[in-house]
Image (cartoon, rainbow, N blue to C red; front, side):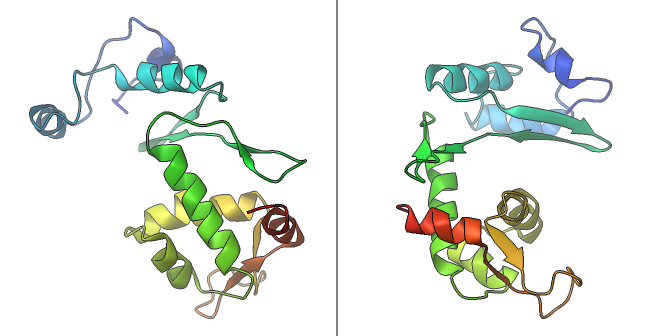
Length: 167
């Protein structure tokens, strides 16, 4: 996120677009990966609205910015509710399903990451494994030593119920 810009600034439809790194932004534009500067956040919110999904949560922190797309699981069926236009939600649901099914036995973080085919370790840890832990679907086998090289992850009762209810 550009310096001196807040999340509230991004939500203002008339905010000015200030790429943090002009060279990278220009490469993305030249490769047609973006159509214009400053429209991505608004389009993401529009897609969520059209799909009747909760708006993404955004956070600005020292040196970075995060955006989290929220999915919900039906308490009755254990199935994901709502769909987002495009690939993102389908990919997220797919990796959650893969991990939930695989973690009926203890697995190392690297083994789980390999199943999901997410290549970047820190991204996998921060955006995926931490989410599964926060949702209480997985737990550490050595909770008192979260950084142990022998650490593994296994389904919780909540994770087993999710698996049993139709995953």
